[in-house]
Length: 289
Image 1 (tube, rainbow, N blue to C red):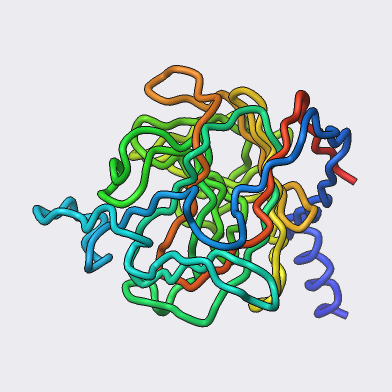
Image 2 (image 1 turned 180 degrees about the vertical axis):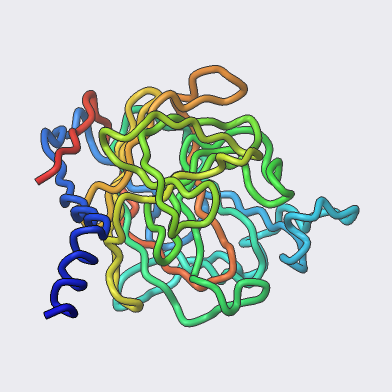
């Protein structure tokens, strides 16, 4: 009896468990305002420019005295057009870090693409989560950021964090709403509609906000990413699940509303396909079920 009473008192004194976060859904999805544009012709990379960072990627965040590798035809095989699962795809090797930047300058669009992981993992991320990125509103000189990427806003493609927002470059900032999540690395912020407003900026302690949920499929399967951009606002969607909304995108304090599409190479083999962009005039809405 005393044990039962003690257990009852302990349960009464214990803090209530947090309610699980409700699933998010996308509504008011805009119809295309014009013809679709394919960013990959399925044959070659003639519409893209490649740039490679350092021969040893471990130097990337150390501001080394040596120069990055820079531009190279097809970036020495790090990026190439291939056939994967019977369809044309862009292959990203990942061994050397760098970027593949489309030559277009885009604004107010819905971009859809598919990606899947290959088997290759390379130092210094050989034992870490596979990592890549879809960078949008890319601008400025190649390699301006850590000798490896152009300035941009990142739709993170990293297992466990697909859809996270990362400003790439010290000039880039974005606002979103977030809640504290002590399970995350610093700054321990997770996107949540109705959370408090947070500004993230490259090169600061507030350098990212984690995606609302993990909607990635198992390794080896194709995943679909949808990026909706209108003016200085954007929504990240993973396999039909909205996971991030950002606004007030800025570069050097000025509104950032357009730019190129950039794919990263950052330690993991990755395939991209069906990269299609359609113009839009409104953004969808994110609501909780």
